[in-house]
Amino acid sequence: MSLKFSQLGTRQTESDIARLMTAALQRPELLSLAAGFTDDRTLPLAELTEVAVSLCEEGDRSVLQYGANQGSQKLRKLMTGRLEAQDHAGWSYDLECSFISNGSQQALYLAVQTLCDPGDIVLVEQPTYFVFLEMLRGLGVEAISMPMLRNGDVDKAGLSNVLEAYAAAGNLDRVKAVYLVSYYANPSGHSVSRECKSSLLALLGKFDGTIALFEDAAYRELFYAKPFEAESSLALAGEGNDVPIFYSTTLTKPFATGLKVGFGYCTHGDWLDRMMAVKGQQDFGTANYNQALLAKSLETGLFDRHLGVLRKSYLEKIETLHIHLADTLLAQGWSWTLPEGGLYLWLMAPGDMETGFDSELHQAAIEAGVLYVPGELCNAGRSPRNWARLSFGVLGLEDLKKAADRFCFAVKHTTAMKIS
Image (cartoon, rainbow, N blue to C red; front, side, top):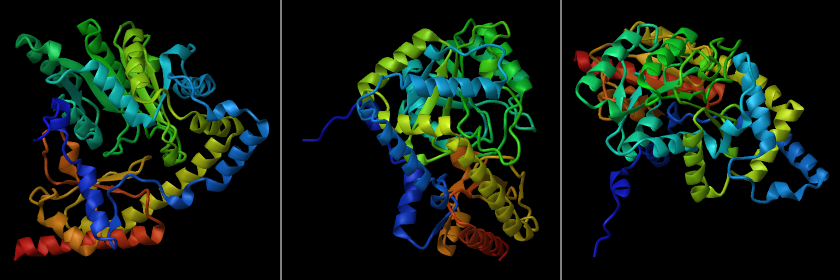
């Protein structure tokens, strides 16, 4: 007898990133420009060991006990204070609006799960974070791409027309949120301007608080030279509207990914309470010891010292990747904009070259020994199909050069096949 699965269980299919990981496992000689991992060589093993020793010397065994569902108050204080400083906020953020999660991915999942039913709509940028799109599909939520400006910001006038069309059709109640990847975005590297955030809040404010704003700031601290100066939407929330804002970031991408600790801030108390109720059923609270390690790392300055190491490393890597792609790909009609932070290079191929999973280029890249993320995954409608995301976080410089050369070889091979 076959089990009959729930609607949620039935909707779940193998993720796109799992397909890429399977390919990597089957071909161990492959170099990955796909996974958004950090470089093992930069992980602060010795420094974190010293932090662990200092926790032991302090003798507070409660760090190995269950913690509060909403998270360590000490860590939340440190994070809300850090956020106030980053935002240049004119007021103190409410500690009770914050929580700690198992990575920012859990925070996003909780927000969507408690806000949206199957059939509801979340409006997203084009392109956007493809794992978020997978999450929406798994929950039965429809992702719709918003009209975008050439500079990468959302087209406010175009979005207003979209929302008016939903209202005219009697479907506005299905639209639950707008989702922004606001700093050095995965995949585009774009940062959302203050003007764009402010105009979106003004537009959403016309809908009586029925449409929330999600701000995913996972890469905010991974700038190379200087921070992007646009304030967070939290700092703009006092501009005379009641738009529910959900802000999430992570302490693991800019420090040690295996710790899996994220941070969320929600301006809507009832929504936050519902997220915490679901979270309590899932995990009884994020790992208390990991929170203690991170709190100590923030207090001692280790976190920021390590960020300095990462920023220097990633700047060197993006420059290396750019140099090793430019001679071949620019001549082939490819184009890209160098990001000022983050882990990704977002490439546009000539219009007649497809980059998807089933494309000649993707197969040629695997045969050449390199993986990349097809750009179609990052668009709600799976088009356009001539973009590719390259991640430079995990590979060392020499392997990064080899991976770039392999990608260029695949492009030249595919171009030659098209000509012949």
